[in-house]
Length: 172
Image (cartoon, rainbow, N blue to C red; front, side, top):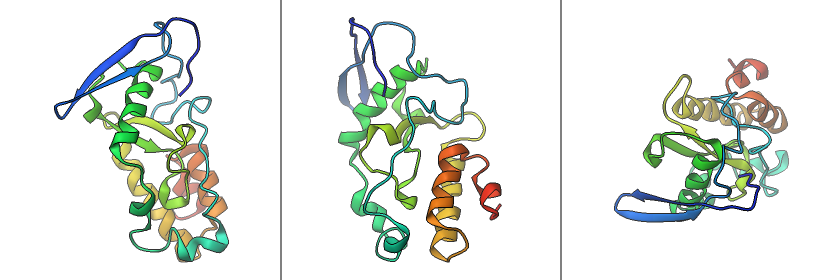
C-alpha cells in the first residue's frame, strides 16, 4: 500500500482476541482512492503475477485441484496488510471482518501470493462485493483450464475490471 509523508500513526485493531498494531503511514487523509469501488485504486494495487504460473504451466499449477491452498499466505501475513490497507484507503469501518484481503489477480489465475501490490482490502459490503469477485475468479479459472480462454486474456480482463471480466472474455 502507498504511504508518504513524515508523520506516522499506529493503528491497533483487535481480531479474534488478537491485538494487531501496525504503523500506518502518515496521519493524514487516505493515500488510496475509494472512487472506483468495487475496483481497487490501480496506483495502490496494480496487480502482480506469480512467475511460476504461465500458459505452459497451468496443468501443474492453477488447474490442479487444491493448488492455491499450497501458496496462499497465512492470515498472520495478510492481516497486517489488511490493517494498513484499511488506513490507506481511508475506510471509516475498521472492522477486519468486513473486508477480504484480496488478490487483485487471484491465485486461481496466477496472481502473486505475497506481493502487497496484488493485495487490497476489498469490502464485503456494497454491490458487487468481494463475494461476487470470488465467483468471477472461479469461472475464469475454469475457462482457462478447459481451454476456452488464455491465461493472459483472463488475467488482463480481471486486472482491468473484474466486474466486466466475464463479458470481456466471452464467457459471461
